[in-house]
Length: 433
Ligand SMILES: *Cc1c(COP(=O)(O)O)cnc(C)c1O
Image (cartoon, rainbow, N blue to C red; front, top):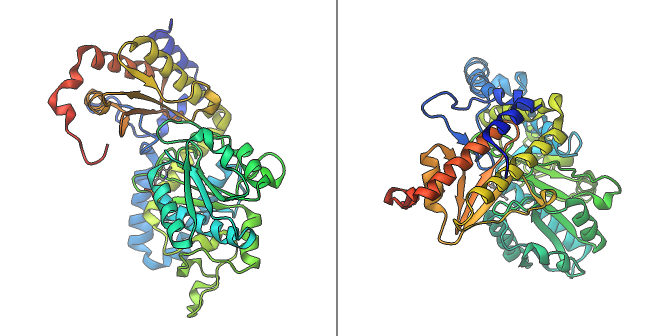
């Protein structure tokens, strides 16, 4: 590794996306300055957010009160922000809505997928997913499998293709794995699942805003996804607990319209005419039925500012530029760690082939990486730890610089060489890791 710190500064100076860092209110030039490599867990605060939330609170809520549902367009926020997110994911307007949490949206989407599977392929009882999928996805699938008489089959990522057969009802995958950062081939998977007569549900929690996604595929319908959900507070920078999103292919929502299919959380705002206040439920057309209750307006205002930071990248090379930089950052990090931390027991968990990698790099350390991450955080380098043994570092091309990667690895080298991670204070587990 012949790279130097000077070279990293030169890469930053040439970076076409560099101006976007200024869209974020990062604690630079303060005693709390950090190197933030955790935008895959909680995106950074956009500069626009605080003023926008203040405006919504003071003017729209405080002054205009309930009129703002109409006059400030509050009621349209789930669709309006949904259209913006759709544009980042190769989906069309009116196909995606913002609502609830990722877990709840997955419940709605997977349940709707199981309804379709029960109609089309009644003998099929299998939901297949990845054993190391994010736990909430597995717990939701487990619950639905129990309620609906399906069997949840879990396998290693490499074993999934062999399970796409005539026993499969629904394949439910997270596009980029939260631990390993491994990315599935979405279009090839969609084609295989559809050739087997089954349906596919994607979780884009670590993809939306991080890697190019094309939900509708590049060719025929068979290459497109059926359902997708994703997260607002990771790479979309929507703020802690930001609402999530759900997308359904328009051929499927059209079918749900024609066959009067519901999603299971049939709340009033997913009704075709909520303000008629009728006692019986008639789902709204299209994606609208995936709304359940009243949208969280303050959180949506913050989310929109986050999504706008992604859209701002369009003027700086857009998704291809973001992907190029994301790969360059993770390649640099991996190369520096392997060259400078050799002999310290760190093994790369993320695919070496950048085409199979999301926007993160993970290293395992057999005797537990938790205190190492705590020592790094004490030095101002924020990544996170994922049990049992993963040190995870996320790269957000909107605001991560090459110099951050260099300096983060320098701190890691020092933590390992001095053994400072062995101090007792770094071994106390916090509630959130
Ligand atoms: C972050 C994440 C979630 C989060 O779900 P919440 O309902 O927001 O807590 C779900 N699935 C995956 C794959 C994630 O990475």
